[in-house]
Structure formats: structure tokens, C-alpha cells
Image (cartoon, rainbow, N blue to C red):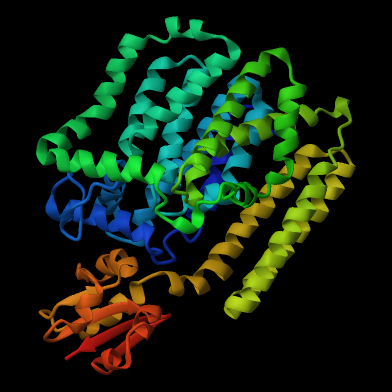
Length: 510
């Protein structure tokens, strides 16, 4: 692997840019999350109000404004589009990989830093969310820079980025860095660091970065903002499940196994080696990274609301530990042959490939070509990894997995997501509605479809309730097939089917 240089930086940028920008705008925004952020940013532009987020013309207290601001800027530069909505995530994902490279190089050496950046950018969940119009990459970048800044004693940067994280996702922007640093000090008995952390100046820096938007929102909206943002969207979501089906304590175990592929195959032995066999100068930085990853995992395991994307902030520290491990065993003088790596890769890759083929065959046969292509790429990675490890060519094995994941991005964005996407977006039904709407009758839209419908149709509609089916007068309904099938025979007779699009229906009641 190259030494830390302009060449290494260019390689990371090129690899990351290819992964993040390949067909970035080629798929419509997927319901319900991506359209929420895109529609809110679009309404910021339409209303000319960059303080108070809105959706459907009403104030929206769900998230702080950082990602809305970034998307608004992208819309202003490139026009309102899927590409522009996803552009901030893609750019910040590349920045995250670069920062991991520079920081890990300073902490553990150039080879470890380069490997860590490659591991991060090719982790399945990291690059998937990097290609999505959601807040998770933005939060992950600011938390990563903040925590690595603490580790490298760049304390002013630590406070500023903690503030930016707070303007991205709320209190966790302060809670996560504070708790992780506290646990590190506790386990290493290094509370003396508090004396050098410039706390008074740091508090001022954090306040100047994080608080202006919160103060402005309180002055404009009063207790409605506090009760909804802090009360419901933070405290209630932590203590009560938003999605009851995801409350299992083990929820994030399979998420981590799949999300960190292909590097899950080496993750456990990397962490174990970092704990048991590292140079003294690397012991504390590695311990900090392990505490960081473990805290994120345990915090969201305890949380009652669980979403796949929540544990993304643990991937940068895991990638750095794995990068250190590859540099550690890649020294030819050690003669390392970590056969657990290709063995676990065979097991996990095989299960993933079989699951992809079986799932496509049962649920969506149009995905079978992509499933077979995925299985072929994984098979090549597995065989190549066995070969390289047997020959003690650790660097070549890493490069092989990086190349395999870059090829998997092509398969994913060409053969898997495009044919599956119509079942998960509202663009087609919104376009069908636009062609038939009389411009004045009320429109009722199922809650799940409403963000995407509003973004693509330019009409907010009203959130559908059971009583709306029998409302007097002419009305349009945009619903999923399951909601229509829940009506009784009399209710169905009052409706005329105007169009369908992948289990979504446009209905008219005269």
C-alpha cells in the first residue's frame, strides 16, 4: 500500500468518488425517508425561510436543519433533482474517508490509515447511506472529526464539530462525544486531560456553533418547538418504539454483520488483536476507538426505537481498527496467515449470495440477474482472498476486496436497485396524478406515500384518515393497494381506478 502522500490521497478520492457518484441520481427518491429531506429543503427555498423547516407547508420539528441547508444549497446550484438531494451525503462520505485516512495515518502509520479509509468507503452500509438523501452520513462525519480531534488533542476542532453534530441530529451530537470521552477517561484513569481540554473556551465554541439555531427556533415557536423536538423526537423515541417490530435486543447484530461487509469477516479478530497484541504507543488510541464503537452499538441496543442506519457512527472507528490490523499482520516478517478471514468471508458471503438469489426468486424475479451477478462477485472475492492469504499477500487481499466492493456497487446500482426501485418510490404515481388532476378537488394521500408524492407532484395533499373515504364531493386518493383492499365492497364501488404503479393506486371518487 502507498505511503502517506499525494498519490494515496488521490487514490482514496478516486475510489470513493467512483463508489459514491456511480448512478447517484439515476434512481428516484425512495419512500419515505429520502423525500422527507428533499421536500423540506425544497420548501425552504420556496418559502425563503432557512430557519424554520417546513413540510407540506407546515412547520416541521423533526430534525435540526443542517442537512436541509446542505440540500438547499445543492438545489440552488444544480436544480431540484435526485442527484442534488443526495449530493451532500456523497461528498461528506468522501470527506469522512479522507479524514479517517489522515487521522489514522498520524496515529498508526501510513499503511494503517490507507487501509482504514478503504475499509470505510467500501463497507456496505457506509456507501449505501452515502448514496442516500438522509442525515446519517452528515452526523457520522461530524462525530468522527470531533472524536478523532479529541484523540489527537485538537480540542477546538472537537468542540466545533460536536456543535455541528448537534445542529445535524440534536442532543446526540453532544451526548455521544461527551459520553465516549468520559468512558475513555474513566477506563484509562486519565481525568487529568480535563485540565488541557480548554473547557471554558470549548464551551463557548460549542455554544456559538450549536445554540443559535435552537435559540432562534425557541424565540419564533416557543414551547411548541421544545415539546415536539426534544420531547417527542428525542426522549419519546428513545424510550418508546417508533417501529414496534424492531425492539428486539439483538436487532443490531445482523445489521452490523451485513452493514460492515465484507470486513465483518475480519472485524472480531481485529478488535481482539487490538486489545491483546499491539504496541504500547497504539494501545490507548485503539482502546478509544473500541470504546467509541461499543458505546454507539450499546446505546442504540438499549434505545426502544431502532433503525438500520442508527449504528453508522460506529463504522469509522471499526474501519480504523481493521486498517490497523491489516498493517499489523501485513508485515512480511510476521509471516501471518489469518485463515479466519477467508473462512468467515466464505460463510458470510455465501449466506449473503444465497439469500440474494432466494429472495429475488421468491419476491421479485426481475432481480435475479443482479442476484446472480452479486453471487459471482462474492465468489471471486472469496476465492481470491483464500489465495492471497495462503501466499501471505495481505495487501493484495485487501485490494481484491476493495475492487470486489467497487464492482458490487456497479451491480447494485445497475441490476438490483433500479428494477426494485418502482416498488419503493412515488414518482410514477405522482406523475400519473399530475396528468389527471383537475387542479381544485381535494387530494388524500396515504401517510407513507405523502413525502414522495409531495416532492414529485408539487401538491401536498391531505394525510388520509379512515373518515376521508366517505367525505362528500369529488376527491382523489393516492394509496397503496393494501389500503384499498381494506375497504368494504360499498366503499370500493364509489371509487374509480385511474392508474396504478407498482402496488400504488390513483383513485377518483365522483
